Length: 460
Image (cartoon, rainbow, N blue to C red; front, side):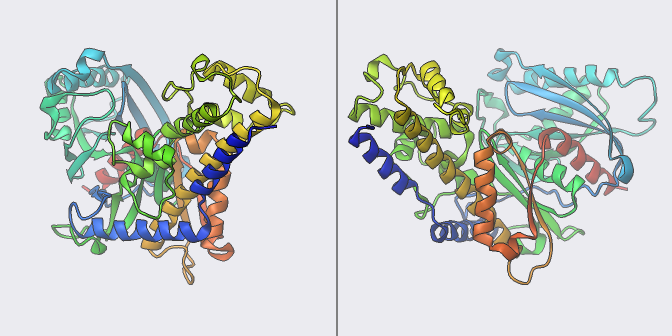
């Protein structure tokens, strides 16, 4: 028998994570209200609602060679893409990945951007003999996955570094201009024509292949969403409205929080112990970085109240972030009759051996509760955006496609299916027929090149 104490912990978890449709509708309404507040004035909302200055998305007619630089972690990628119009689309794509030496991540800005520019110079050098760019300057889309206060399509100031970077003299500086200067120093004849984040890139990559894409979402280690807004519906937007009448908004929805979110004692403790307590609450409930950690915390509580996992100190249950989302995905999808994969994961990762089948079933149930809550909340966020832009509501005949990138959505089938079925549940059978969800990869690479192309054509 699974110990009564353990069963009680699981029952309490199920209740605390419950996200019935009524509650999710409240979450969607709260998301929509925060979006409106964020569009009204700078700092008016928990979510930043950053104006991306991307007012033209690719149409599929783009032609020519474009470059992209994707900087978001310890490596960066440079890409060269040949676009060949409606028929062929992407005719050719070459890319190179470069590791950033650790000392450059905490040095100064000119060293980091100099290193990037020299890698770009080498990449441009093997363009081949064919004179692709006779008399024309090369154009580059720059994906910079750190918080930026965007000031135009190609410029934005760095708000703060995240991940492993801490280059003090770059904070408050225009990262587009820093890259432009470094390229000029290294003799690279190239113009930064777009500075974007990966979510905006996902939206662009989705739109390139499907003109009905209106939202781009990242559901991976982190989570965010971008969407196409009517420029006239952004009170805080200054300057003349773009000709297209549209503006891509980067919501930064990871920082959304509301009293209607189903938050448990485990989430509370995780947040308290995090590097950014009180921030990124929505992301901590739904993204891949945290799901395994929430499950570990539940298992630790069970171990402290029962003998199911043996002595806690003989296990690794106290090691933070030792369970990763791929581990819980593997356990959740275990279809072996005796849950062999669950047994292996518990033994390998947590040093928990000799569990009963019943205990392993309970572990799968915990993975299911935590992941379902995540997927259902992500769906509610998407519905909030759809409602904000008047999509998938009664009387709206238009097709609305959501482009989604990220490992959580791509590789975790239970998560993906739950997200899709929750969308149907919240929108209703009829309205949900006009909504589609599409895996869209490499928004940060291809997406950046496509936005450079879309905004290059605007200049002519």
